[in-house]
Image 1 (cartoon, rainbow, N blue to C red):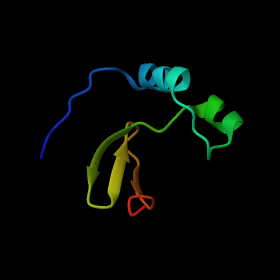
Image 2: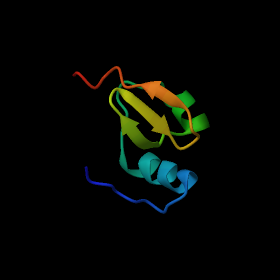
Image 3: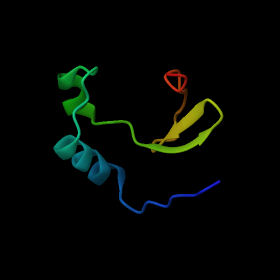
Length: 62
């Protein structure tokens, strides 16, 4: 497994995303208020975000 290290803080990654990426299936106002979810790790179908929340990657099969 390849480990990719990132030393940028979450708010900086969210700002870069907002400047350079369009999220077509997302409600823009909610995205502007909170920012994107930054995924820091994954195990099987579980992903963990930069706030430590684990969620199921339900879109992985697509």
